[in-house]
Amino acid sequence: MYLSSLAPELLLNIISYLDPYDLANFIQTCRYIYNTCNGLLRQKVDALTLEFFTEFRHPVGGWGRYYSLRNSGLMFAVSFTIVDVESGHQSSIYNTLSEDLFEALKSQITKGNKRIINGKIQMSEEMLNSSRHIRRILLTLNAYSHFHPASEFSVTSLCAKFPLKDVPILFDTRKLTKLCLTFRTALWEYDYSKGFPNPNSEPSQHAPPKKEVLQDILSLKDLLLKVSNLEVLSLRPQVSFIGIAEPLLVSPPALSQLKQAVEGLTKLHTLKISQYLFHPSFFLPVPETVKTLQYKKTDRLSQQWWCHFARAPLTNVENLSIGLESSGFLSGSSTNAGAGYKGFLKGIGKGFTIGDVEIRSLKKFTCQDADNLRLPRDLVECIKRKNQGLEE
Image (cartoon, rainbow, N blue to C red; front, top):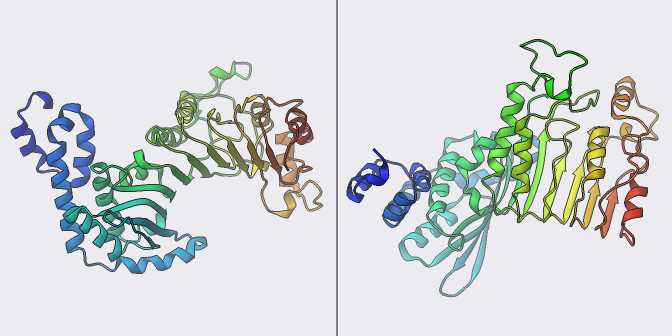
């Protein structure tokens, strides 16, 4: 039996057993459910939210002290803009999930005289797991957000240092416009459980990556499909350093799906990527709407990656920034390069050139340590040739 065939009274009786988070997700599964139950569900979610924050008695405000300890792994900061509907007066709350926020929510639900908007949250996995109360609060706010327009309640900026799968569980991804993701990824390894490929076989016949790698790729893809209003995206994968930057031997369908997900971010204007995504030779396409593009720790990228970069049109990019690892031994002029460093240079293609670039829309270009041995020798020359009058 389909849910759409149920009488409204029976459907409402069934969903009365769901908690706010399940309600918020359930209502999005069927247009009939939304049209039939949205008004009543909003009333129920409001009532449950009001009850939750009225009865909540834990000292959440004290957690704001962790904001200053981000470098130790604990990252926690929260801010919202509170708007008084009648006077238009705006005030802000910072660095805490506190009584100020709870009181504003209760006032919004009971009197409709508050707007709680432009929420900005920074949170690490250590902080998220430090107390079950934080997760309960975020789940309640997420459910509440699904039943209220962005003009009434919104978290628009999220800096998350926890598993990607938790982001859509804890936050209303439809309202996010700025997203910074720091996430662990599995080491790129091939699955040779069914034997080794013939050395003379085509790249497409090479063994696929291990399932752990594919799962990480699909997790990022699934998340990016849910943030359609994103304007700023920063990706900071925590990857295992690969001593020899080998070419990407096989491109699994998961990478193609990830590319499509990124290209679907039609409102994105700023893209920042640190190190490499999953493999040093994988180049993530840049949506045509992007105007500011930043690559950091590019000393870990392969020659194959730079060849993809050179061929990418980057149609509307106006501001390009290329940065390296800050450690001194990474400089091309350093005399401290050991065997590991030289081995990496061998894999990356020491002294290679790219010949030309497609990008020709730049207004500003920044390149840290352009003489570094891990960058194409002619990178700056090629970019200047195609982009006249650059601001450096």
